[in-house]
Length: 146
Image 1 (cartoon, rainbow, N blue to C red):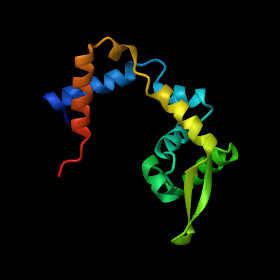
Image 2 (image 1 turned 30 degrees about the vertical axis):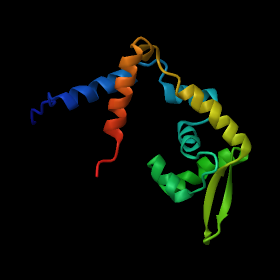
Image 3 (image 1 turned 90 degrees about the vertical axis):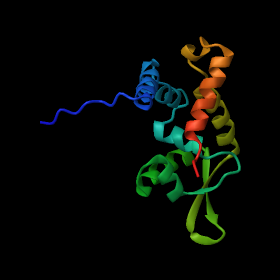
């Protein structure tokens, strides 16, 4: 058996703190909001990815959900039954089905994201300057590097 040790550098420590921060929220945000809107976590993620006016092929959504395209069909079927999304033909290739939010889906998405993006109490305890600094650092880390 190998004796692996966890790295002890600032990036690892920051990542551990972010994981602890996310895990400390009770109940966990993503499943709780999904349940509040009678969605599965995968359906919530799909609604998050599909913005108003955006049409995506099912294969692109499978990539965003990190699942096989065959799994997307069931998720789409349930959202379509609820009138939240619709399938459309791709004008360039009629074999490709594109997904788009309906008006009801766009309205629900707006309410859902408002709930999902409510900051936890722990962030509210930071000063405005600290909140901005944290935001800016995370945005900088997420930015694509050339």
